[in-house]
Length: 110
Length: 114
Image (cartoon, rainbow over the protein chains, first blue to last red):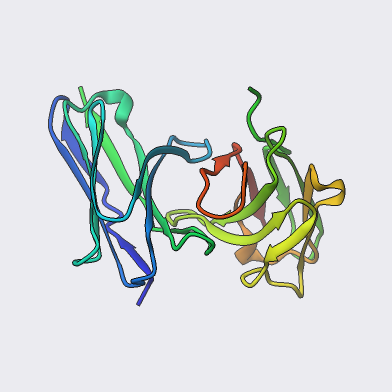
């Protein structure tokens, strides 16, 4: 079993739709949870950073962490074609290395 | 603020050849990481430096991969000899401090081994 599981998609939705991306994990030591966005032929860029359980909102993006279920989500409201990218969840226990999910390839259709 | 720089951006070699990648982190960042990202997968940490010391190289295939960060600034990652399964994007990242601090990634070097 992988430490972090993420549905690779691909996921294709119309512009303006609400997008839900999810990851599950098995390591209960994880405390820091991140979402990275990676455009084609670019390096990942940090989108959201959450410590422990709860919600965090930044503009059209909302990150949720449910440590009891070992489940994290990223919601994108009013999705735009510029949101088309691969979204990677990542997590760590602090001093431990960052462990990434497989990435979900998302396409927003105009 | 300049980002993480990597070169070359692309490299094509034949199996059993050697190759080296270079990374210059964001100025002042003490921690430097090398990741391997195989097509369709998330990045996998190969090695982590804190200044010029190795913190974690548990997933580095040491029989063929080596890395150094002399003077605690830029770093090189070498593969010798390369195998077909080494075809991947090699990403360098840096962070200000060790631990859960935000990592900033470079554009990567895309390696194709024929």
